[in-house]
Image 1 (cartoon, one colour):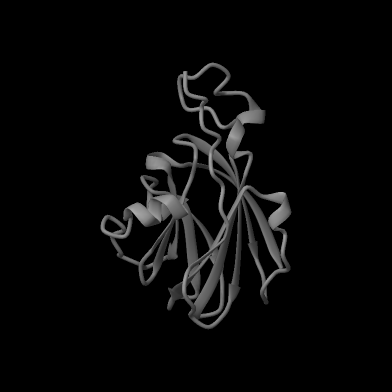
Image 2 (image 1 turned 135 degrees about the horizontal axis):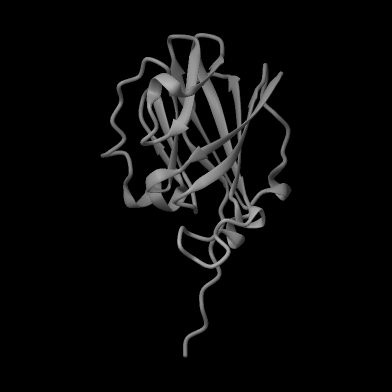
Length: 166
């Protein structure tokens, strides 16, 4: 198992997990359902939705098998399959420069990605008071392991608290 920590700019409220050679366009994949689920899926690229349109802290774990359940530690958890014919995944913000992206070795074929997000209720957007404080940074935990292709799934859904009506 390999674990890495990254700080990525989640421009347009998203991160990308992709085969390093993928040329997929997620434009059509961000349907209303995908935005609600925080997960856009194409063949070789996944879009992971974020609550923040700024920097997020990302922990990446490359595993040799499916991890156990850690849903209680997170606000929102999704999983999806991605094809990785190159054997290397790149993880980056959607407007980051791909050649500079963090890369991770995985077995060629299909990989399963679990994206678990935490601290969502505390997130502040750029320009909001306290937006640069460490306690308001969204935490994204990405776990990647080899697995047969299977359908995307929302394991745990976060729903923001609504403001009481006046």
